[in-house]
Amino acid sequence: MALVSEFLGQLTLSYGGEEEPKFPTVVPVRDFDPDRDAARIETAIKTKGVDEQTIIDILTRRSAEQRREIAFEYERIAKKDLSVALKGALSGALEALLLGLMKTTAQYDASELKASMKGLGTDEETLIELVCSRNNGELAEIKKAYRDPLYLVSAVFKKELEKDISGDTSGNFAKLLLALVQTKRDEPSNVVDYQKIDDDARALYEAGVKRKGTDVGCWISIMSERSIPHLQKGTDEFTVRVKSSGPVGPAAGPGRSCWVTVVTVLPPACQCFERYKSYSPYDMKESIRKEVKGELEKSFLTLVECFENRQLYFANKLYEAMKSKGAKEKVVTRILVSRCEVDLMRIRTEFKRQHKKSLYQTIAEHTKGDYQKALLSLCGGDD
Image (cartoon, rainbow, N blue to C red; front, side, top):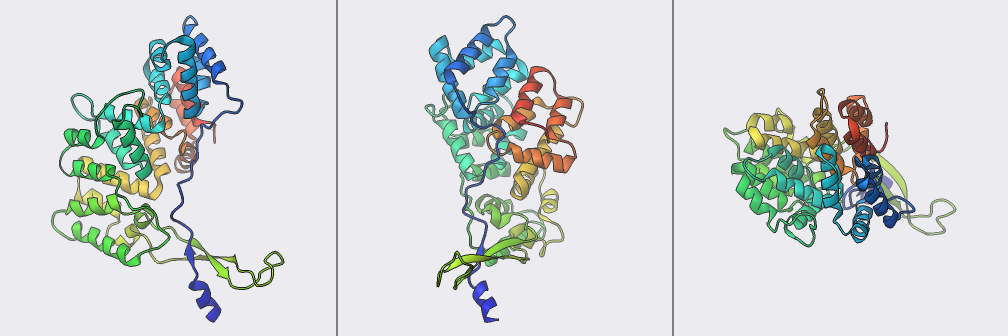
């Protein structure tokens, strides 16, 4: 019993604090030669009818940093900006995709946000996706790209993202988006604060389902400021490591301490949304659907879905965009361009698991021509 107590006193949770790993489908190519790539693109653009395949093969299989080097060399060789040359040589969905690849991920997201709030009307779907699915680090980079003309070389906005959101949205929808772009969300911690989890779960219930009307401000505060491990739906188990105070095995050496034992335990509901169900007859997503409507409902649901499994959220968005005969090209392009160097490999995995068909096969069925070739190249293979 004393040994068990000693072990339990030294438990360390295995999550929290680490940088989120990346699962890209587009990675830096080996034996990279920007001079050669730039020359090949220049020849492809000058070819009668334009050699789209060569341009696709190069730009969809180089990292953002490598594409930047190609653009530098292209301007040196052709005395022309590569993005301007591509815009003159291409058209339609292929043009939008390849021009998107000429930006960094943050630059691309910033340009998509700007486009969603440009002119009359607002593209709320794009606005919700980009703001509600990005983490603190991604949002900070997007804000920097949005306002800094030296950072965002391909589009000079010279405005604050918050100011544009305030001008194009209103009410609680605007308050939620603004709270998110302020990036006040707590970073993950190795310490589980059970009291705070319980307090937040009860506060979410009392601000919504329990009362007549909804205290949206309370929901916004909790969902925009708490860390994702604090909020997200709990898993069935987690792993802890236990430190031994004595030698273990021939490699340990006499009297040397080391981490030796892995213990898998079933915890109580150790995330806020799991704890919430002990107060409410509905889970968090059901409560959102009952309490709020319109763009605010969509925003809260996007947040919860991304807290639970961000890659599954993107997989479902892609499925919805391609479930009819055609495809919502703008949505498909935005997700593949913005996630190909981040987590598209995991999105592919979630797509196959959830929809019983690979993302590659689905793209092949619902798109066509050079645009299809570019998408399949970014997808990176079949599953």
